[in-house]
Length: 208
Image (cartoon, rainbow, N blue to C red; front, side, top):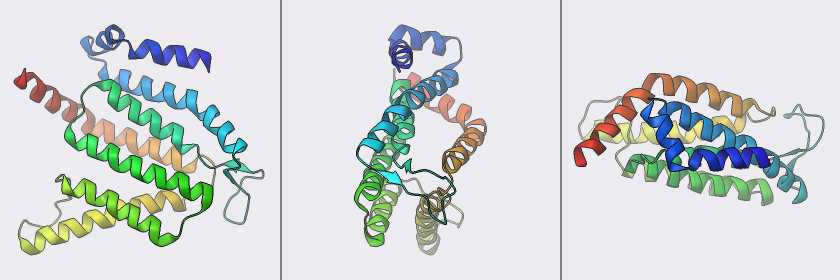
């Protein structure tokens, strides 16, 4: 953990970040920071889960044989968040996504710890979806117009709430949800990452 913490501190130094950026390796900086934060914090989060008895007891839906901490997602989310903040390019859309993610993470922790009714979790998911949609991040499958706009908003809500619950449903095997998230993030990054970063860099350069 000490080595990981030292590496994270080193990566957060401005001149180290600039070395990556100036050499065209911004993606490697983001990946390295996210990996190190997650790798360093996961054992700590695991110990906290065991200490406070936030554990998943084996049953017919879960294949692990021993009680397993349920709060490992905290380390993953903090790794993602810190890598986004450390990148120093935070468009308003990403800030809203982080805010919605924090809301869902807090509700998830509360559910893992005390157990929450389904309606409360659904309300939180709808609220998080509303935050994202209010900032203009809407799927555009249907043509623009009164009915088309409503259909696109409903489709976006269905997509966000559906994906959130889909990950909850596949989380019966330790590591499955995290593995799927890594694969999805990788392919989305390959497909959209360079174009998205270039557009935001150009916007910031134009302002300055």
